Image (cartoon, rainbow, N blue to C red; front, side):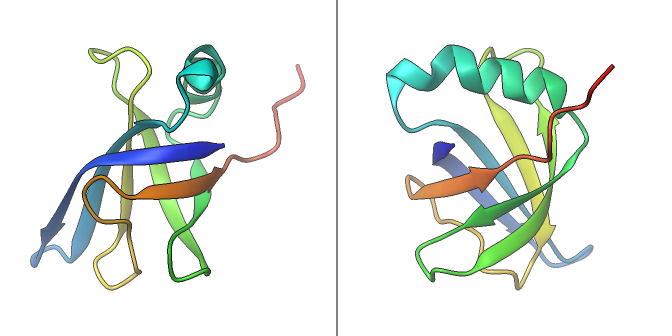
Length: 95
């Protein structure tokens, strides 16, 4: 899913980067919302402008429809404010 970083915050202790994001394309709004609900607290991967895949943990922002938050290691190459990135979700859970 093509996504867009709204805000990126880096913290020294604990060493973590937090990214608030949404979908890049408006037409993907409903799809991202569904994926966030299905994948809340999941391990995901994102590819940033450096071309590498980075591991992150995802949470759905329940008070902001269609937005999520990523937690990454502080030195992991997280996207910057207003940067686009590709987000890979875990396989869909089968009930």
